[in-house]
Image (cartoon, rainbow, N blue to C red; front, side, top):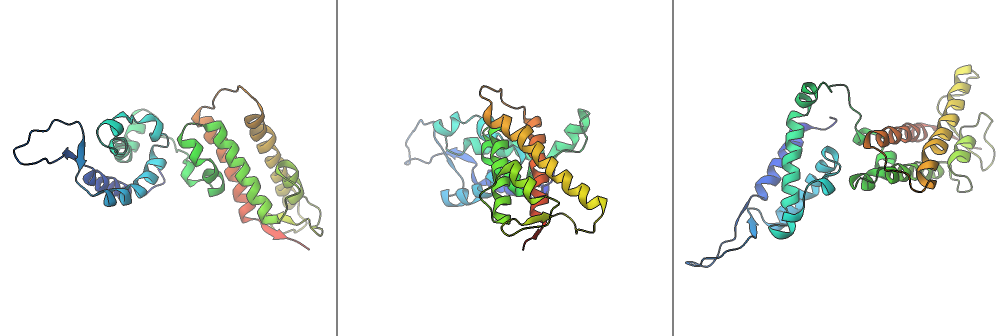
Length: 247
């Protein structure tokens, strides 16, 4: 897991201390029956801690907002869902490697958090609510928009845009190129850029278009969506690190 485990667990522990629940104090000699509990920490301290903890939860338990029950947050205390999610996340951080080894699933794992920020950043909000197909589509739009920004063009998009910017022909006025390596006249140079063009076409024709245009498709399984998201991460990294050549 690409995360500082010790740091993350400390943040979770501090949050759980602040949100420890106890009965609300009442007047002396008063007997009060209530399901509402108070936290040890102040609202201000908890909100500040939650700002960090929610980002940890998004990384460790991406669907915690929908999978961790929230009914107690309404009936008992507003932080109940966060508390349970933090407890679950701490166990994941502590025992992830052990559990995967015990289940025979200790192969390397792909983390969306380590993908290029254009890909994961575009998808993250929808991913957390389990809308995986829409999340991949959002990532595709983000990568396209950033590529347009880099080359300063709005007249082309998606497949046609990448065919143009990775073209082997020299740049023209208003048509800059992206170069993944210097043009040394080699077969490698031509292969790299033909491959980038073909890869981009596959991303948009084979992934983005079906996800966006086919009504009634079932939701993508998360592992398949992660694979698709990683494809756009590869393309995003190529675009981001490419040299811009213009005339």
